[in-house]
Image (tube, rainbow, N blue to C red; front, side, top):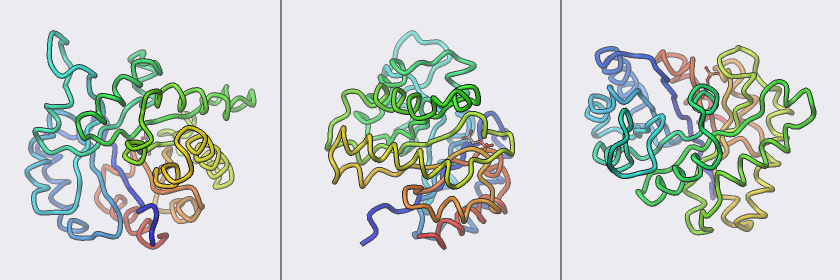
Length: 256
Ligand code: PGA
């Protein structure tokens, strides 16, 4: 029995106009829209959510967002809510990405509210955690990852825990071309699995997908995806072009 199906998620960040997004998703749907070996999620910018949602109809690809507010509606200029995303049949939402933490001041408390809201609305959070270069050099990696994981998951029930996806993204590896070694990544993934076991118990912890993110490319993916606790990838740069993203999905399929 496969306990954890591999998951490849594309984080398009602030890239692709509606027309560019439609072209990319059509290409992806044609190439991988029928495969069922790997869960594949694409996370376009909000402006392209509707056109991507339409293009995904009838395919196995899933739709995710890159962020959302924790309230359902109200006076929150510039924000988008969980029910708005659900209206497009989004299934996932990236929360606590390091770019949100760094450039938009998001902290663990806020991210925790978003995680709980996502789960209440049948959206699977892709919760990002990870250390900066300074924190790694100071030997604080596991301490930082532990604090982020525990605080962001506060109040999540054992029953809903398997719906959470965690993305370990060392901040120094995001968009830099510097990928964590397989040993560095597996060490943190195993540590996170241990933490989840303490919080939710073994059966639930074994079901949680823990993705690696940070300069994952077709060339380095097979080694990373072969690690025991690496259940997929959160892909930035390499998700913007169909060929490299498809190669990553194929690498995940081969690694299962
Ligand atoms: P990258 O981004 O693949 O471009 O490093 C990953 C991410 O930020 O999720």
